[in-house]
Length: 361
Image (cartoon, rainbow, N blue to C red; front, side, top):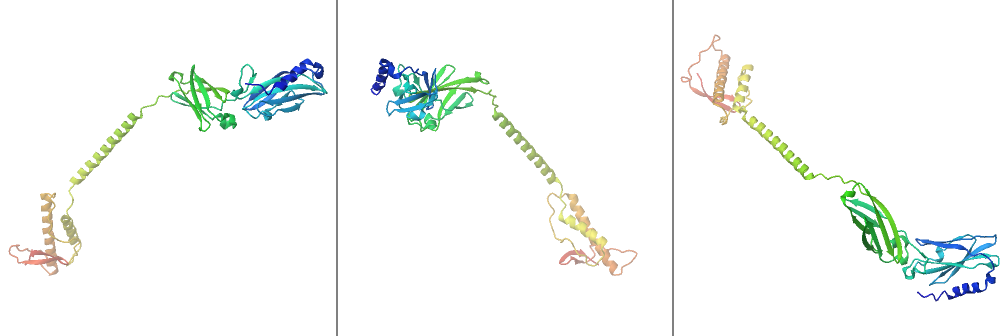
């Protein structure tokens, strides 16, 4: 790179060497250095014999823009506001003044941009912090993610591709991302043998020729063996099915036993009700609580139940005949019942609207 802008400066230094009386015997600053990091640029120097009148003049001379001079009585100066353009290359001169006399100047050079980077000429190459790194561990993979440098510093110089590498276990993996991406990411695979241990990751980046690096320790948790839930689910389903079949079988057995219990027929119930009513209440026309109809016996009714119903019906008829004779003034000592075959048949009213055929005198 040409240095056409700096001849006047170098001529002044040469002139000072030829005519030291112009500068007198004021000592020059020593150990001039600069810390330029994350676009904060602070200049430092030492001075061996300061006086009450000692002051320092700092000339910031960019390659692509106008130079600026700042005076200070301190031995350091923040020149960030005078070196805002990260794309530029800066040559800085520091001169000591004691009254009207001044010392020889001492220069230093620095830049952020790779366009001006020359290891032989640039004593200071500025740097950036690597963006804050977040990590997460999933099985045998460490996931790394962070923001693009442009999103942090908002410098036009950084509006380009960010290349970075991740070093783990002597293996280097390269990645890159751009400013329009939400996050820059990386994936590092590791062996299960390091589970329960912490590993060190080294991350190095480069953007616009500006280097950055950082280290990050990541602890890999001990992996707990995952149980096969398929067997558990199958066992639960099988057990549930067995319990359901048992309940259904039990209900079915109860239903079978209940269906075998003989049900009391309506005719038998009505006959028993009439008998009880006739014996307890003596009246000419008792009220029937059940209609007397000719009904067929259920198929499940046994022969003994049929005989019992027939006998009870005859008994009810006999009791009613006795009651009628008592009302008519029959023999108090007893009565003689004529044969059913000799007596004429007639219709006997069993209740309102209900009649049955019987034998009478």
